[in-house]
Each structure stands twice: as structure tokens, then as C-alpha cells.
Image 1 (tube, one colour):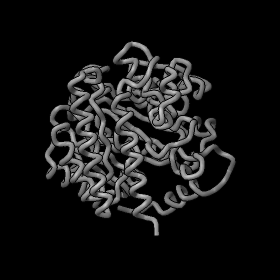
Image 2 (cartoon, one colour):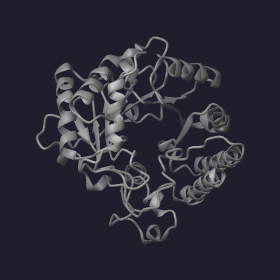
Image 3 (tube, helix red, strand yellow):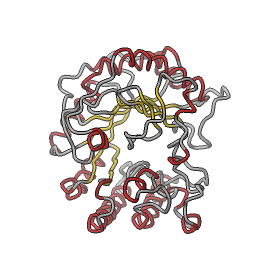
Length: 369
């Protein structure tokens, strides 16, 4: 594939040049602090029971953004970029299965590079169509996350090798939602990912969130994974813990929240409506045709921040508060009917966050001269 030399230079300028736009603090300069999350279509090759889209939109829903709305989106993204004054932005393609319409991914990325200072581009895919993809359409995508769904490790390996050989990506992530099947083989997935240099991302099945038996099994498996990662670090493997479990950022030790939900997350749905949350497809706070686009994504109830007024005092005193931030408000809303209270997986976070931080300390110790 032809490398986009000028666009690579543009990304380097995005990271390095000081121009007065907002950016992350020391050590977090490359972390995007504004996220464009695009659901251009709900068409998919699968109907997974744990998928946020199909659970809320309905199975068989193949709503796809029409051309008029898509044309407006190409204008809207640069408009928001100019208004938000953020230095490092990310733009992601989700669904549905985004690789069914790579032509639209290309048109969006062309607009991004022609009309903004550049953005990190990523695609979240199940990999079912990697053999037939037009890879030239994806030349500006830096990151690809492959959802393993229910395919075997050998097939996953084959698909990820195709991505490595035919794309310009600088990093691949294996994503596994831990339904019963993937929960049982999570350690096998971990081993494969670490040995082949892939990042890992495990999501719990949100819709099993209050099932006490499931939560016990989940916590046990998280501990087993951490045990394996300790040995992997000692063996010299590169282990990345950021976003590995339920989007946690274990290195975050600042009191401010690293999660921009309800503030700097612009989720766009196929009908052109927008919302503040990647998981809640029922909350529509406006459309891309509305004036003053930034105001449309502001949503206090979705602020993922332990400084919220409805977070209990015990969260304020917890040693893991800067990472957990009181838990995802949408998860609480789905499972308890309110965004108030502590995380729905508080007991898991209390045990796992310290372990993730310990893994990071092991990495630092290994790298010290």
C-alpha cells in the first residue's frame, strides 16, 4: 500500500507543535482528549448478543447513513474540530461492521486530513471480511481492533496477519467480550496476544453485570490473566495495561478524570443524530444539522468522574478512585436505573486496579538501568 508521507508528517506535527490547542498533560500528550465515534451503519455480518448496537437498535436493523447526511458529516467533523480547540483527536469507525463500507472510511479520512490538523484513525472490526477489503481505502487508519467473537485462535491469527501485511496500521488490538465462551478461553487469548505483540482488550458482558456468579468467574479470570502477565513481563514481553480491562487507565494518578464521556465524546449514529455515549444508542442529544455542535454533546449525567455529586463518599476515599472514577455512568444506568452510586463492578476494580498498577511498576523496574 502507498504510504501517506505527507499525512504522517501532519500527525507528527499534531503531536509536537505547540499552537494553543488543548492537549494532555505531561506523559499524556498523545492521548486523544476528543473522540469522534462514528456508527455510519448498523449492517453487520453477525448479531452478537452482547453488542450495544443490536441490543438497543434491534436485530436485523440495517439502517445506513444516507448520502445527504453523510455529506453533512464530512462538513460537520471539521466544524467541531475547529470549535473544540483540542490538539489530539481520535476518529473511530464502529458499527455494525465498518469494513463493509471502506469507501466511506476513506472519504471521512480525506476530509479530516484536508480540513483539520489530522487525527488518530481507528477501526473496530470483527474481521469477517478482511479477505475482500479494499485496503487502499484504509491507508490513513493507524489502529485496528479485532473482535475475536467466536472464531478460533488460528483464524484470528490469519486475519491479523492479513491486516499487518496489507494495511498501514502501527498497532493491532485483540478485543474479547467475555461471554461464557470467551471467558473460558481468555487465558488462551491472552497468551496468543502477548506472544505475538498485540495489545489486549477485555470487556465484561454488560448485560450479565448483576449476575453474582458471572462476576465471581470474571474476577477469577482477571486474576489469572494478571498472574500470566507478571510472568510475561519477567520474560521480557511488552505488556500494555491501558484499556485492557473495561477501559481502565491504571497509570492515571491525577485527580482529574481521563474519561471524556458527556464532555468531549461525539458519537454519531446512522440517522445523523448525535449523543454523548458510545454504549447508549437510545440517548440522542441533537443532530449533525444543528447549530452550536459542541453544546449538543454536553451531558452532565454521563460525566464519568468521581467528583460528581451523586458519587458516594467511599469512592472519594478509595485508593483506586483516579482510575475507576466511580464507574461508568451508563453501566450503572442500565443495570440499576440510576447513574448514582459506586461502580457496578466496584469489588472487581478494588482488586484488579492495584494489580494492574503493580504490573506497571514491574515494567518500570525491568526498564531501569
